Image (cartoon, rainbow, N blue to C red; front, side):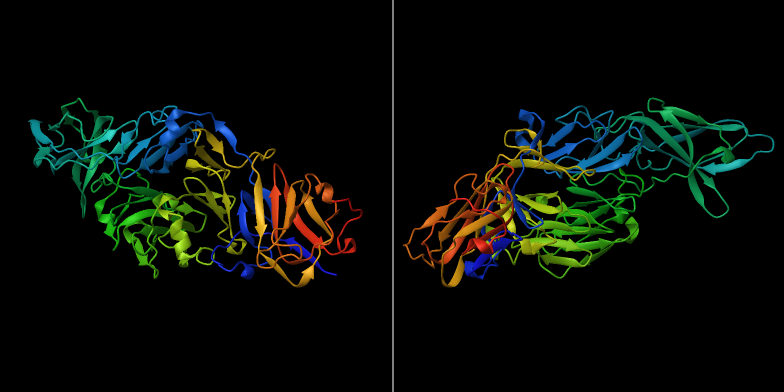
Length: 556
């Protein structure tokens, strides 16, 4: 007497070229299966969130504005982050390396699918310094003050402020009896999409040990002059935008550091924003890495940097103390779109493997599943990635490889589906994608429907002596079919092509069934074919009915 039990099902491991070396629960092949708690079930149907729109045909990046729920699409690979959030509005910052970095908010963004309006991120400084003229007469007992003036541009809608102009001429006047009239440019900068409507004026005030530029007044951009009659004690806060600049015009990526500033890159240069000011990117915070940068991701308190050479981890709590650490392994990133924040670590496609970066460093996670040649045959440069239920989806043009990065022993499965772009809802973890019908769908979240047929094929199972399996039982909610076939390396006693497939609906209700008698196998391969809502927990074969759990057997 003998029996065969298949359970704790796993995916395929193409790296193992000799299938006999696979584990009993490993698949030699599987399609459209999701592995959860060791059981087999088909991928659920998508839920259509938005009906087809031709604008999504060229979608590379998908985004949902959280304040309104409206959907937006981008035709270039675009990084999008929340730059600021209030109770009533959310500002987003986005960049793609083609257009200059931009921001938008609820008042500008429109209803989609394209961004309605935006502002260029950051404002260039005024190029014309102010001039100052003194009017009036000195008091009999004058209080003399020597000062210079500067001014900056302000976009009152976005709150952005530029670096200041060059300083004015130096003047000395009596604070009581005289007035300083400041003349400034009335021409707003035209090198970006702005709403510059205000000039912010500052002047020097000398203290006991330092000289600072302190706030004087905001005036409309059309105001060519301002008459300053303020006493030194009446001036406001010190200017903070002295060294502020716009981010690089071709900044190709952006992410947010948990300490409250933003991180971007251009070429092989890392860039950092002023804390609390998403539009200000002082060049004094920049530094270069050895290799051109492909993409970045925030993992805990670190910034993972994927390059065309080795990856880096950058640590620090302020933009001026960021320290890069060059990791040991040469894992060049071949697809920026493959980079996915998995929570505490990130995953990306390298030239010869899938790579995981955590605070401990970088490691290849696919080499025990796919050989270098097999990995490269998938064309990893064409992958875009998504995080779904703790799994990593490597999405190719016509199929998806599903990886369980924290449980690689489960192998991988392939899903026959095509998508253009993806958006991960940060609140729910749901993955929304644009499919090839140009619909936006909630990936595999239809709890009541699975129209996709699926299959799982075992390794060749060999026996010391030929066996006849007289009966079988499928445990779970399963009414698909099971095929038991001789393995080509261990033929049955009846010839080279014998196989048996259970009748439809024969395995419902966990019912044991009898198998054809008189067939002795030296080796078998088991194929499971499921349909809508089928779920298989275990599969038992035995040489006698008494070896199976269950009660009555039906004919088969």
